[in-house]
Amino acid sequence: MDKLEQAKYIILTFGIFLLLIASFLFYQSLHPFKDSQETNGHVVQPSSSLNKEVKQGLIVSFKTLWNQNIELHLSQPQNLLPLRKGQSVPVIYSESEPGRAILKPHPSLTSPFSILADLGSAMIFCFLLIHLKDFKKQRKVRYLQNHGIEIKTVLRSVEVDPEHESNGKKPYRIYTEWLNPSATALHIFKSDYLLFDPSEMLEDKEVTVLIKKDNPSEYYLDLSFLSSPKKAPNFKW
Image (cartoon, rainbow, N blue to C red; front, side, top):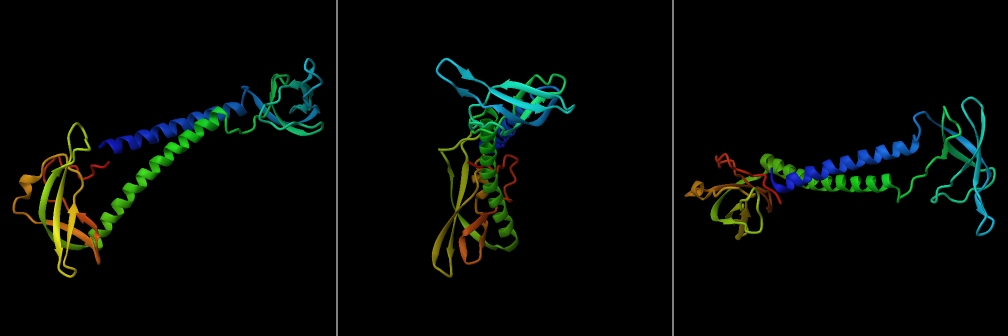
């Protein structure tokens, strides 16, 4: 497996891992108690500041499953808009200890689970982009294998790509040429990357290339004749 292929699945793994953590944190925020229950309460007294020294806290009244009336001083989340007296608000409380309650948290772009979810989604999106590129290439190859025109090309060169490396080795590419008789144009074709030197297998050998009808720029250089076990036609960057 080449470096891009490995990186693709590493990105996917981290993306899924971050989404799982985000889901766990979100679940915890909605279930802060072992026996969490959710109900609707009403604001008895909105939080406000009388002056710099005296502050009035938020007071919320709600009923439990057993119709027990509870009135509590609660802290208002900073990302929540100011509440009005009598306004209905969702409350999460402990069924065994109704005195332990919080206002239901609202989604926020700056909350930990939102940040982790965004990062995880971005990583999975990157994986899909890379995978889509590979899928489109494979679909093109299948199309040319079924509907392409087979031509015989002449070996031009076998070159080492100095800019890339996989498993400590520099990859090779086969270059062939073909003179289009109908357009009197010379076309150059190049193979996928190879992790071995195929020169010895190409002596006095024509190389088959599948091209799209009326569009030789869409092609697939067939390497099936290379019998080396080290063949790596899916070497990508």
